[in-house]
Length: 179
Image (cartoon, rainbow, N blue to C red):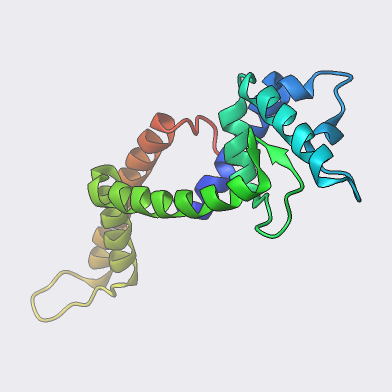
């Protein structure tokens, strides 16, 4: 699974958590509270931003909101105009840089230590090699159809093995049903 696939799988889960449990998702709450109005004086925005940050820190899904803000690329290094996940736009920009390094390190560590992933990729490579191989015969070897049948059996065996490892991995990581 690529990091893009992982991000796409995780995003709907984060959004569902926010929609179900965020303090700001309650009926009647004004979402403009988290955004600076056009032409709003800096002093007014600073007070509103501080109130928004305090509001977010009491939210049960603040971490999910922050992660989604980082994934969405919220924040601008030149303009202080929003609060999301209890962070200002400037803080989100800075945190995104720190998180990018952490994420890259986590992915490297996962790939290095993930024996299940190594088995999965090893079987897939072996399956591809076997499928590309052309069975040939020479003097004293079985008939071509026998060699082809043996190769097909080997391919079926590898495909079944791949399916078992993939299914176990998907079940363990919460993919119960695959689209």
